[in-house]
Length: 179
Image (cartoon, rainbow, N blue to C red; front, top):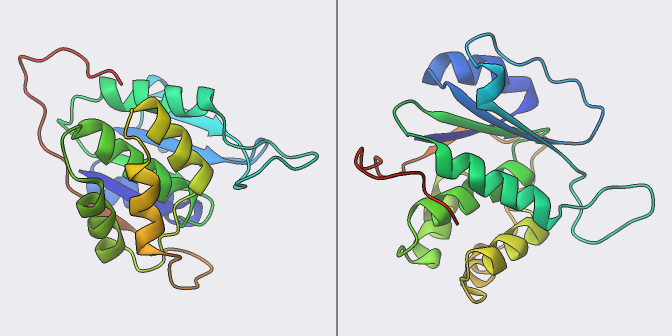
């Protein structure tokens, strides 16, 4: 189970879900107090701005960020929930959740996964640059980009409502999943 939330709802979401792993996608320098139930080694902190094209003074999402995300998700045993958050719970975190569901279900239809994202979160507006980078790394040949484009921009919101996406349990006989 992957639950997405905003920074403001992080602690209550981790407590409610019982998550033991967490991904933060937020601007460098933003203070994030890791919940005590999340060990430091179970927290991935990716620092970049929520932009889709380079801009002076800002850090765009990069291939290295997506590789770290894919490695972290690939090592997740799925025994306990994963929480993914950004500042508002609308763009970077929803892109990361979509990327994670695609990586964990390599044969799944991208349109189906994007549709599940939209049903779970009317405000989800996945960061297009993050999705495009992942699409290339996962060799989805533009299907992830097309799927996110098909759901369009989410409803206007200052902060997204926490939501959950289901993922298949991991086969205990399998090794780490690598993209």
